[in-house]
Amino acid sequence: MKKRIALIAHDNKKDEIVELASEFADVLRQCVLTATGTTGKRLSQEVGLTIERKLSGPLGGDLQIGAELAEGKIDAVIFLRDPLTPQPHEPDINALVRACDVHNVPCATNPATARILLSQLTPRHPSHS
Ligand SMILES: O=C(CO)COP(=O)(O)O
View 1 (cartoon, rainbow, N blue to C red):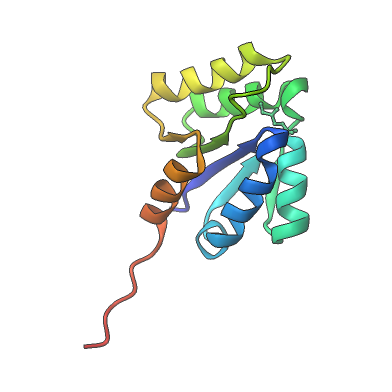
View 2: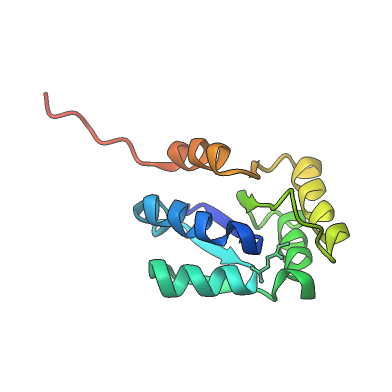
């Protein structure tokens, strides 16, 4: 069954999620993707991924993804948070990360962890020995 991945990035991290998604585009194309509004728009326009877009984060997108996750509909979350900029919807952000911990869903909050997570989803190529 296809993995269901949520992709989210704060504004200062959007270039990084585009770079990450480009790097792992082959893997991500094999997954069912969802994203918050602006992140999803950039990933579909700049990386060409097919993504279900929720509302923008400050308007409730994190909560929509958190609700799906609580229902068992999300297998992993890539959430590139900006730790240096206050966010008006901080409670929503915390709720999503908390939901990951409650339901034991992998949640990568920085690119280094995201690369490890996405590498695990990369199909192994059989050797031609
Ligand atoms: O704010 C966000 C996550 O908390 C991201 O929302 P956007 O992808 O709409 O910018």
